Image 1 (cartoon, one colour):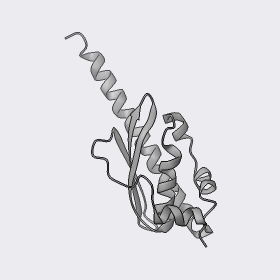
Image 2 (cartoon, one colour; image 1 turned 135 degrees about the vertical axis):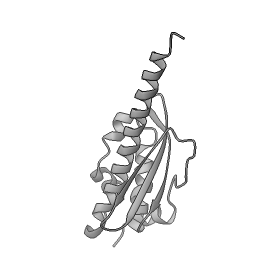
Image 3 (cartoon, rainbow, N blue to C red; image 1 turned 30 degrees about the vertical axis):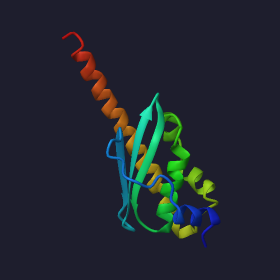
Image 4 (tube, rainbow, N blue to C red; image 1 turned 120 degrees about the vertical axis):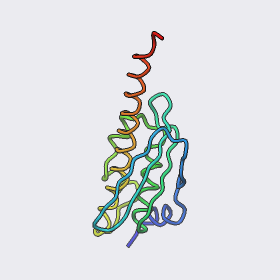
Length: 134
């Protein structure tokens, strides 16, 4: 069944809360099972300074979301973009075969949040440059 790490992250999920003042958020859902995850991030000096999430899903989805937040916190944006499903599975000491797909939720939502942050930052930077002479 589930490893002790999975049960620990399911029973006491870390960083599970909304973040109204987030720099960016990213969502991902798995239509085949109905699970949905939204990750919120705050970025300082190109690092994920704060991360939280709201997840609707099974025990494995909650555990993988929690572990994704733990792995990403403090990482540079580039390092966080390189977190894989395999990293999450290893950190949780594995998942039952029929739940392995849940690790895709965290990776996809995290990448969406980072990409949204980068798009917002690019838009702000180009706005700042176009209005700097006024």
